[in-house]
Length: 337
Ligand SMILES: NC(=O)c1ccc[n+]([C@@H]2O[C@H](COP(=O)([O-])OP(=O)(O)OC[C@H]3O[C@@H](n4cnc5c(N)ncnc54)[C@H](O)[C@@H]3O)[C@@H](O)[C@H]2O)c1
Image 1 (cartoon, rainbow, N blue to C red):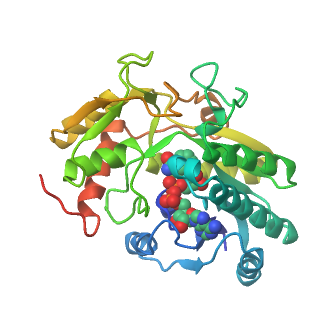
Image 2 (cartoon, helix red, strand yellow):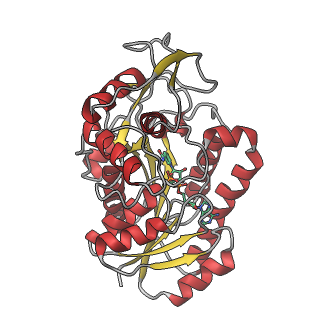
């Protein structure tokens, strides 16, 4: 009983959320086609919790197969939908791939939920929906600006699809997820070359990548580099449990930011990584990257008040755990430490 469908549950944020679900007495039912991860994350959760998980290797765009899972599993109380492609850079090259997968997987899930009278959908949205926001910190009422990438557009469209559905829901607009569980057994296993700062830092630290290029030091920010709101993936995972409880109690549709409320620059993030892990990184300043917003960080008042949730872990802890994951990840060739 207390079963929760977790699409994309074998992925980075999904696997951490499965862990929290189990800790809180829920029973995650994972649906993942393993297109951007490995079964090792499922095994990692099983090993940490000493519990066998229900895992279905299914494409979420296949409504018939999802329906089969819902018919087979009794006692489902809601669904968390992580399954989507997430590379901003790839979405610019292959927009159709993103529109097809990210929209179709959500539509299939909603259709099956409606047909089975299942409510309580928690959706993985992103701060990318805001585009270049007019004010900072960005709160949930700030109007969406033009999407900066096809990926961001899929998140805007998905929120609209959810808004127009009949399902009780919570859209969580994540800021930048970093770090990993301290066991080093679950984490980001994306098939692509990383495009986000912290995984790139880890590659440079491990010698897999020659140097870190800081894209721009002439932005109008406190030290000239881009500013982001980095949230520990474990805090992010916990927010899903609170969101599910909120959704069940309130029987409504809502949207929440999930961030720390603190803006941290790229240069400062590199410095903290070096300090906590005692590693010197080879860095150079490069040109700005297309589509990068100078500065974005979250207004956390709404999630604090209604979800009773606040980020607890520090950036130092997150950057330490990110390096721990890099070291423990199978097949990683560590050249220093
Ligand atoms: N990582 C971040 O910082 C971040 C920020 C904002 C939003 N998000 C969103 O959070 C969600 C999870 O992100 P993540 O970082 O864990 O990514 P991830 O790639 O590690 O996880 C996504 C999972 O979904 C699976 N998947 C993709 N398409 C599928 C399909 N059609 N059917 C079944 N499984 C499918 C993948 O195999 C993968 O395991 C995504 O929706 C992403 O857009 C992530």
